Length: 139
Image (cartoon, rainbow, N blue to C red; front, top):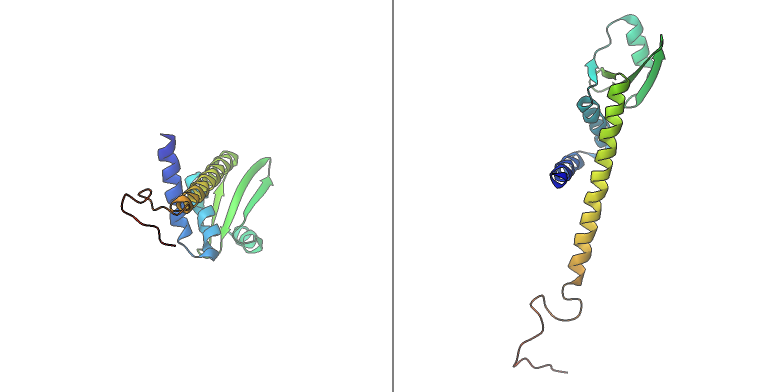
């Protein structure tokens, strides 16, 4: 079961890796936020539009007001913000950590695979073993 989850997360990471470098961070963050329950909202009131314009793009902001804490992520490309509460943020952190672990395990597996390729034929024999009878070494 654990390997299936790791394989699934690895394939998600690989899919994200195919996207251009500039958009990888923002699209990955946006997909993790959406998976965590953040809701996409368009600023409607004058105050919301003012706050949206002042916020830094593609960054998760923590906002405390009236004893409540909310998190907002400004996506300037679509003109929307992903908004969530503390529980959504905790879920986002959990998913981000799981993805980071899966990525590290994937990279470690790739390094092990690359290292294994270097051993085949390293001592002069082919993958099939030493030469058979009748093979002559010429010097």
